Image (tube, rainbow, N blue to C red; front, side, top):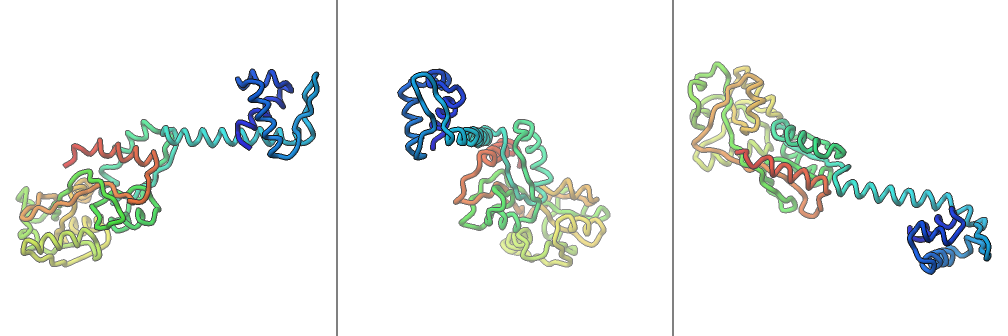
Amino acid sequence: MTPRQLQAFVAVAQTLSFARACERLHLSQPALSLAIRTLEEELGGRLFSRTTRQVRLTPEGAELLPKALQLLADWENVREQCRQRFTLQRGHVSIAAMPSFAANVLPRILKDFRGRHPGVQIAVHDVIHEAVLEMVSAGRVELGFSFEPDSEELAFQPLFVDRFIAIVPPTSVLTRAKAITWSNLLAHDFIALQDPSTVRQLLRRALEENGLTLRVALECHQLTTVGKLVASGLGVSAVPALCEPQMRALGVRCLRLYRPIVRKPVGVIMRRDQQLSTAASAVVSALLESTRTLA
């Protein structure tokens, strides 16, 4: 059965007139008769008893009518839901983002996006870089936002380049300068994320390429904990500049860090073999537009 056949059947069943059904559906009499005949042939029996004076439903036709009405309603509902998804009147996007990105970039962008597309639901998972990659790879989320991955199965669309800054206790002698070198910073107890943290590996490689060694005095799992340990005077650290608002809120001082300047692209992570939904594509477009001014 096709929706067109069911529409023809319902029109005749409700009007009990082929002529009025033709007017309702804007069909010619031959086209309507063909639709009814092919439907009856497919089902194996007559749905209408017809004379020169009247049209009546057969018992089988009467039983089919409410079911046909429900099928057409379901068909229209499905079609409308699909149309709404393609026009961003409804939809759902799951996102995984490293906490610094989730806290400092996503809110203003998603607020604007939701203002334009209030029917699109968005779920944000703020997790560490490694978890972002795992969730995207496993298909648990459509989009990830983090540092550039070293993976052939994941596609990466850069948004901006983030650089690392130094964070030091408010009472540290280092606060006398607005910018310090890595050599100055590493002369103090260094607090780092635990291995196999991507941030820690990135810093280690960058420093080794410049003849410096990353010696860690304390380590933990979360950048927020790193900030709290630094604020308490237990040591110093280096974090992505995206984290600066949170670090300042914890009471640490943030300083520019150079020799070397450590940078890392931040962007959108997707599976190469997966087509994004219309809603997810719209989120990516909004992010690309809004982050052009980020350094």
